[in-house]
Length: 208
Length: 163
Image (cartoon, rainbow over all chains, first blue to last red; front, top):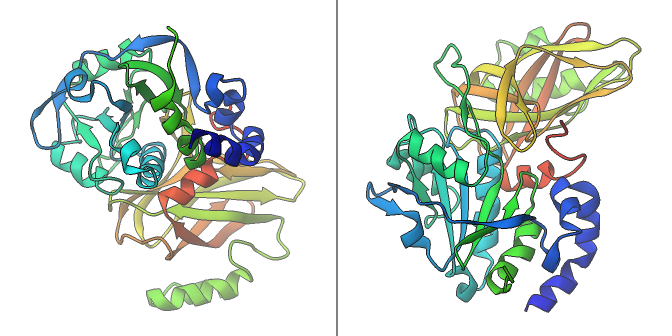
């Protein structure tokens, strides 16, 4: 299965490496990964927030042993957030169920003032009904981003309608089943890159 | 002809704009033209985003001053700032260099539509009017595409977040 995916993707990979920063960086990556492999693994941060059912959600406990894709963003985001989520939703739909069931996607809001559990659920359902949405207090959310060396969110100025935008890290963080962050997926990563990497992230035996 | 479509109903506007523009997304025999316009299918009525390229074949720079569309109460130009972040800065205007182009694209400079009056779906077309300092107003028909397609387009071309 892996071999077929690698062989089938070679032609595309070359073209994409010319065209995307992410894939270009991926050319020198170990295991043929298209995401950016971190120089050192990072532990899954301790993070307890509120999920879209309004229940406490302990990231470490609820996602232990899963390939866990964590993204910090917000539902009013014009392109980076919905593109990442749409790509993941589409790619996960095409995975074999035995692969798909080993992956969890967690969307943590950087805009807790507006992103209520209900709003997160409605927005995430555009992409996949199983995507986990988390909200809570900013200090807790920021601490998790700091632990992952992500730039902290910045609330932009409100316009005359009271609408504002939120600057945030543009990368999806992949925690492999050993509960370590190993690879980051910057904005610009494509469906083909995810389809290439996700099965590998479940199989790779990291040496450190 | 441009004045003719102002009072027309929504269904008629599209046809009138075709006549005014010659071809969708371009203005014949003008130094400044618009290409590759598309909008992301909005997920709510709060915001939408439009991407396009303004090409300036002329010998003097032009400036994009603003834009309007019947489907949004307001439009803003935004730019992402800083590598690796989606931090957005509002900006008033953007230059279209002489003999060059201004590219609005996902992850970069983009036109935000705010407070939508309707929520177009993928496959629909929205009307957009760009206002430039020298070229005046340009009417553009903008196809609406899904975020999956926006994502594919986002990954084409030079790297995002070049600075």
